[in-house]
Length: 396
Image (cartoon, rainbow, N blue to C red; front, side):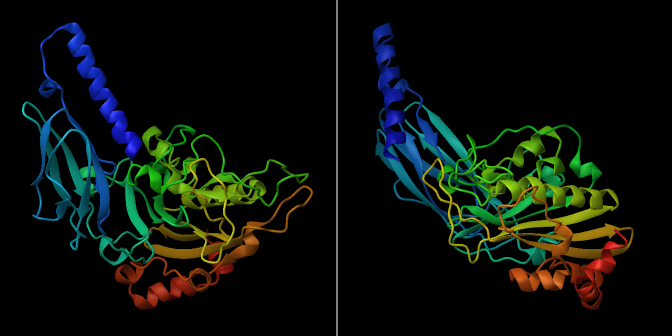
């Protein structure tokens, strides 16, 4: 934090020096101030962050509310020079997002930043079929990305949603990513490989920056005759191939979509299951997908480039709800991450790990497809979730 403020101060000092050398006669008051907000989109649960101000003289900082009133609190509203201001945002208790504008004023200039706080979205109120039940609690962040890579606010403003995630600040991975999938949503294009250092919905310090390479540490298959790559690979939760339009594809390389996966698991097992899911989607009107990483009992952590050590999942899972016409059906997969490495010519059949949704709920402790009963009725939803996966797959 101190280095960032010093960096802003250096810019202002350099600008003043240039003006002085050019003999313009301008004073420090003529320099446009700088206002930096690490997170311009805040979660419904609220929180705090440090806003950076860099100015050559006296300044004031105020809030203009577009929606509501009094939900942003500043540790200081006036000062001079460079400063760090603690901005606290109250929880948003309603479903609609709200906005306000931070305004920084000096004697001759005014700059501003718009702050958006997401609405209190829950699986029960959103109506999206792919969402599991979840709690908006301390230590976790729920967010939804739009197809253009920003924060999804509404269908009217953003169109079709991209993917939602439930991020664990301590584990440095998302417990799950949920999204709808069909040929239209998949789009067309190719893999961008544009690995991102941050997720725009979270501050940079909240994630592992793995944009430059895989997670550090030793994978299960390190130094085996089937890979020998070492280090944990960057395993997607929503696959790159499930969002091929360029802007949407870039979002699949956000760190909140990444988890540390063993090389052989990623390339041999997970990739095969991802292909199978896309085949299921081709035979569906829409396939609602939840991809998850189970870190509840994990004690193994990676290394990383930003001094963050992500938990290595003990298991990975997928919950799939298929809509075809008026018919709905569902299956789940729950795969152990360490599947007995090393192994020559390694290959594991993921179909040996297929479960009913009810069984998957028992394994993960997560209530999947929580909005299905409202659509079909409790009895029909229960029938779908308890159906034999082997019988269900015969029609997929």
